[in-house]
Length: 243
Image (cartoon, one colour):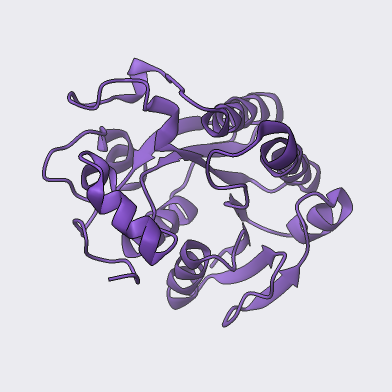
């Protein structure tokens, strides 16, 4: 059993991950600006509060960092505080508290500058098209630095398109490539459980794509399968709560 801190735990995906971990015997601590229902312990706080984040990370075996401004927005007014300063607070807390594993939420948007007509692989490198993706590319680089400099095991996950509302799901379904990079809440919960449970040596850093099954594969899910044994079960529109 692991003690796991999840930032952004009150969102739909955070709650799905929390429930999956608790069903499998893990002790889950939610961290969000809103109370997280049906969880072992809900911590109400803001990732912009460095000391609160530091305290929340104490004694944990893994931290899953989801909290962020979740899409393109004004860089100065909306993105830089949660997605850069907040990210730093989480990485700093993990290092200072000696948490052995950090799982960072990146995004498929870091590769949307590539043509999705061909399978995109990790080794193809990032190609960003907006400032939100830029902040997530920084998250990947910060994760690599903290792993290398502090002997942490870090997984940076380029998450597929996770619907946050009925309107968001409808937008996904109307996009030609959206259903093929879709990531269901259920598959996300299974994926993050696998990340928590896999044994990784200190200092190891990995970037993987994570999405559900696709009629036309556009993201290379091989690294996620090799690293944590993840094989998605759902295909659009299965496995999300907005049907």
